[in-house]
Amino acid sequence: MKTQVQLYVKNETLWTRFFGGGLWFVNIFRKLPIDIAVDGDKQRYKPRSEPYVIDVQPGLHVIEGRDPRALTKKADKALTGAILGAAAMGAGGGSMAAGAILGADAASSNVTRVGLAQLELKDGDIFKLSCQANRKGGVVFKVIQ
Image 1 (tube, rainbow, N blue to C red):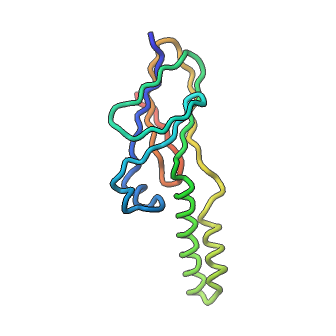
Image 2 (cartoon, one colour; image 1 turned 45 degrees about the vertical axis):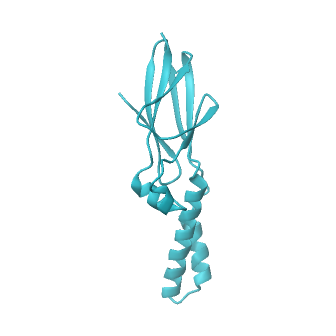
Image 3 (cartoon, rainbow, N blue to C red; image 1 turned 135 degrees about the vertical axis):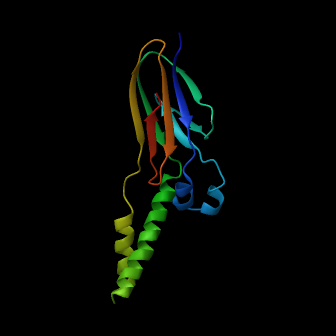
């Protein structure tokens, strides 16, 4: 019997594609890929209805997911924070430049999020995993029964 990992790659939600940074007017119509590494073997997967089937050996496996648009999403959050910070400081009579700096710093994070799943498979196991990028630039894994 084969031991398999089945990856169901979902497209980002409409909300995430619209507010997820850069070129939203193009991204709302596209299927945005994510990078998934199974035991260090990195591949780029596009969303589709059928699962990607990966044959593996029985034992411990690490699945890592990264969003290729994570840095764009992070920069978009910093820009939004800068605009809102400058507006708030300007409305209060303060320096708009200081408000932009504070707003950008508060909104952006120094973390690039990575989705991670570890699993132990026996001979003949079939593990089904749903993967989807989120608005923060991370990949969310959910086990499918």
